[in-house]
Length: 291
Ligand SMILES: C[S@@+](CC[C@H](N)C(=O)[O-])C[C@H]1O[C@@H](n2cnc3c(N)ncnc32)[C@H](O)[C@@H]1O
Image 1 (cartoon, helix red, strand yellow):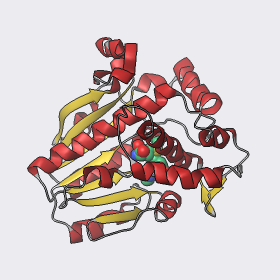
Image 2: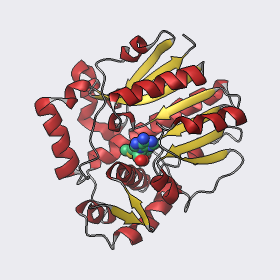
Image 3: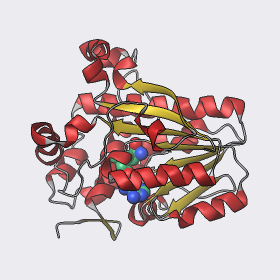
Image 4: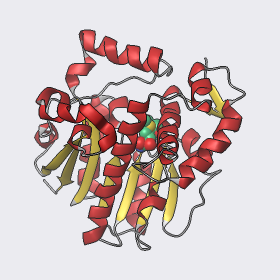
């Protein structure tokens, strides 16, 4: 197996996607007029550069040289900023609310949104959390959960410790899971955390079949140089699709990169006017009420 080892931790192909988003946050932070400011990402990137400079992988060599497609850097930064806003909006009405960042990667959202009262949980696979622990310390309000989101044992301690209200965010995660797993996770969240909110990124299921799937895989392998297990499995047709999974799941709003007014998006902002493009990869916000 051609797996990456970082800080003596072996990473899976899917976990490795967290490196790309980290580099996007850090590179954008260092650019002029940055979309997000994330000194922690810059610090982690610098330490990571030393580790990755030993690697022969193309992806790693490109990252160390800061050679990541500028459009991707802008997209990922716009997404991070929008997810920060979702959290900040939630905290306006629930300042002591509980935020669970599902598939958090090496992102440092807590430091970007901390209002001094939020209780924040970063959840990711044990390899990613193992690396994250080197850079971020747990406190009474900031916690790391080394677990697959699909191993529901992580839910019980959270319920014991916190009364809510709960916001779950899954930025760039659900597409890597299988449909039946995403569905059963959402139903589990609904049943154990009734009244909670879920903000999750989704892809259009058109991209999971035939020639379009070929394009996605080409991009993942040949342009991003990610391993073969980093591939999309889950998609939906429209924002209201999850409402059909169970009564009580309520669509609140959705958001696409192309809705952004960021100057750096350039002419791509025009894509927001074309429904098909707007709904290629986008974000949906639900409330998970009791059925
Ligand atoms: C593209 S990265 C996104 C990271 C972060 N949300 C961000 O936007 O910077 C996808 C993340 O999902 C995590 N992931 C994939 N499957 C997972 C699972 N079953 N449980 C928890 N995390 C998972 C990966 O380890 C990786 O960190």
